[in-house]
Amino acid sequence: QVQLVESGGGSVQAGGSLRLSCAASPTTSMYLYAMGWFRQAPGKAREFVSSITWNGASTFYGDSVKGRFTISRDNAKRTLYLQMNSLKPEDTAVYYCAAKRGGSSDYHGDYNYWGQGTQVTVSS
Image (cartoon, rainbow, N blue to C red; front, side, top):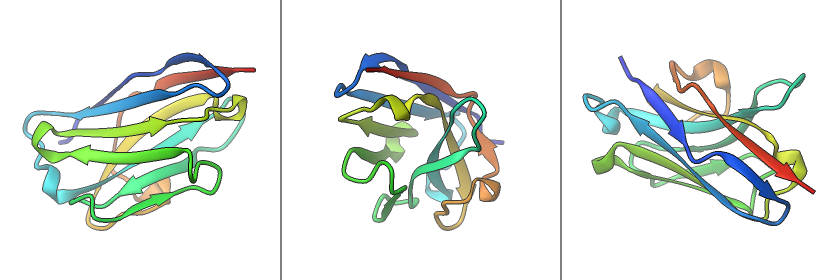
C-alpha cells in the first residue's frame, strides 16, 4: 500500500510561484511507480497536470501548464515535486499527486494511489 501526502499549496498572486511536494510512505519502492499530478477545480472534472516515469527520464505535461510547470522526483527521498511558475488564476484548484505501477499515463483512472490534495489559490 502506497500512502501519499502533498504539501506546499497556498495562496499566491498571479505571476507568482509555488512548489508542491508529495511524500510517499517509507516502505514505498519508488522505482516501481510512475507518478503524476492532477488538479480539480470546483465544479470541474479532474485534470491531468503532469506525469513522470519511474526514473525521471521522461516527463509529460498538460497543454495548459506546458512551459510553466516542471515535474521532478527524488526516489531516494521518496518525494515527487511540482514547480509551478507564472501562475494564473485559472490554475486555482486542489492538486493531487498519484502513483501507478508501470508506465506513465495522463488518465486519472490508471492511477491506483492518491494523496489527499493540497489547495492552490491564485488571485488576480
